[in-house]
Length: 237
Image (tube, rainbow, N blue to C red; front, top):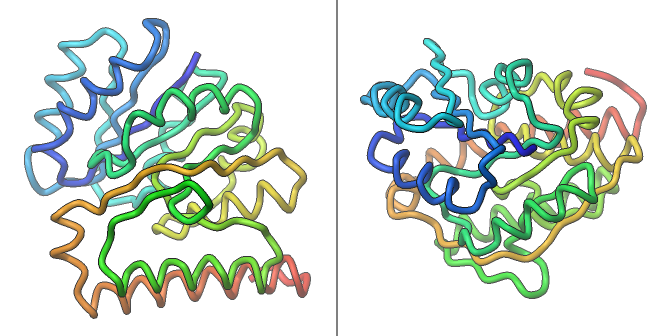
């Protein structure tokens, strides 16, 4: 059984379409959990309607914005699957790769789509592309983990990894993805990265201000330093 988590913050306009597409690919015994993350629009209303409409859709509301990591960790205890995963509700990753994600999740503890390895295709603004590529290079350089795209919102996990590692990952920001991949590799769990086609949505392009990028750099820089100190120096901070 696969438990697909949809972290949803202000996704009222896209949530129903995402659920319908995912149900097309999932088996009848699989489940979708909408982890609504303190939205300020009517995402919660849409989520509740979808829960009533589909037997295998569960809606979970959070009053406060927990971040992707916090929202995912908060629903682990109610997920029934022996495998879990999540995708971004904007479906920036082409959903034709979803069956491959599901299949690979049967073989590896952590699987992620990748925008930056051979065979991948990516369409995003130049500055964001450069910053993202540089960040992943620094993970390889300073932490020693061979990953080319830690941040793609298209991931799956074995239940063993979820219960033994992911449940204890405290990072809540977008950098949560980086932490879980580093923990996976450094702790000896199996890891697979496969190429996907990815197009940055119009909303993300419009929000790609210098201030937003600078804030992302600060967050990921902090986490990169913590990972370096933990796995290279032996200090937990």
